[in-house]
Image 1: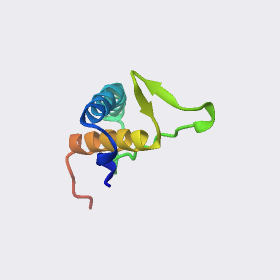
Image 2: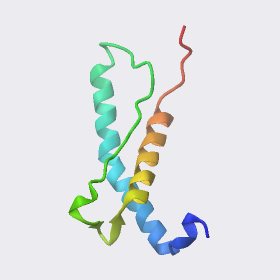
Image 3: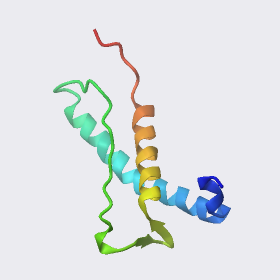
Image 4: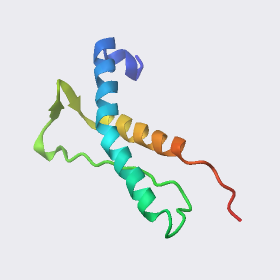
Length: 93
């Protein structure tokens, strides 16, 4: 059974929507920070995003979607993909 088969289609859609909702302010803030530093220096590589889930406080649930390690990995990947798509590749000399 693949990872996707463990969830029904409604749960996947809810998780996808939740990922986009959680990622939106993160991406906006990163773009804002990038504009702030744009004139000072050029970022030589695309930043890597890493979220940490402190499981000590028990499970987290938002609007019926459990925020577990798999969800956090999907959120990280979504944000990373959005960051990479917003940057144009350059040739470094």
